[in-house]
Image (cartoon, rainbow, N blue to C red; front, side, top):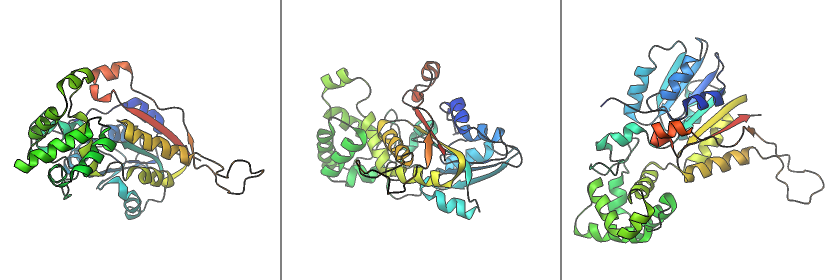
Length: 311
């Protein structure tokens, strides 16, 4: 299947990074290289683009899309949690820009056999890196009721988390839950019909989000990765982060806010004794996609773009 993914807020993201022709830039979530190709097109032969992704299909697509650009390109199959070691292995000491485009790609959702979509029946998987051992099948069939409840509540912000966990545990006592379709049926039985109609949207949406986050440890690595990315920036370099749901946006917002803080002394001290200095300057509030983009690409509706500059 051809790797298809529509980049969200492409022009806003390029403007946020303020690409220098001879600069070095990292796309920590390469995907099909939609954003990365736009960055590369602005780089001269003296520039360098480094792309990371844990998805083998994305790596193949990105290499093909970046094959004829004029700048130097390094494509690495890795999770962005390993950013420091990747840069060290490439001999890079600082960069001029870092991009994170978080969440699941359109290609991953649309490839039924990957198990990300609640709209298509497929084996339970949801691994962005298919070499990892933990998949949605293990989460759904092996986590106890309390663990499922906490995941659905904390990662899905699901009102009916406890009841859905109870229904899953009861169903798997009869036989293992093997497919996304089976899981959707269980969730639909757990959520009362009247509630479903009032809430709108698919009742399994938040559950699939929660399981995907657990399988890929999406939130557990995020704050440290943002901090590591800022550490890698040269003075004046920029970090741009695209988020797609409130949980990851909250983490990014707080991480950048902490990095932008100066003095952390207790209130009331006459002079600063901590010596703490801000590491970045926040560049405005979170940007959202235009109404036209949201109408054309429904997956862009929830996007937020946050930007900061290294001091």
